[in-house]
Length: 164
Image (tube, rainbow, N blue to C red; front, top):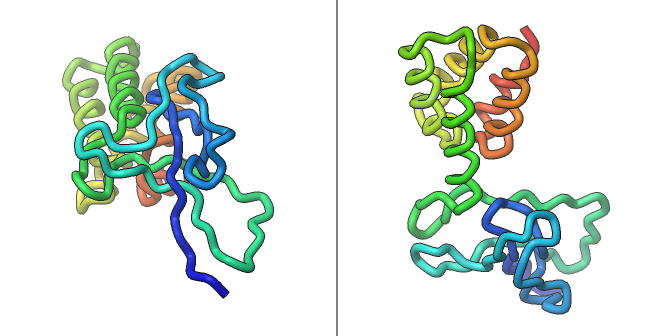
């Protein structure tokens, strides 16, 4: 039996997966996303390291496999364009939220950096997010939650999505 390996993923700059197997199945590649029209990439735009795609394991058939794009480059640590775009959108949406003071908005925006990374502050940031999101109304909180959970660390997701 052969050795396992990672394929190269092709993802648009907004985070839509075009092809998780762009190396082994190049016929599925596209220059632009069919969902949003953004250009697609297969490597980090800062260090040129390829984006890890599908994990090939010889002899194993993955039924129901769903590839999730990474948030950060494992070689240079920089966020991928879709991570930056979602963080920017979350910050902009925070500025539009009613029910929060300016200080609370700034706390919420600052928490996003620790929500997307798994750091010692992640649990604190996720708890702050959850507390402040509860103050803005159900619809606004859900919109913000959707943006952030897509790029949140697993630790933050568990805290944000858990029921009270």
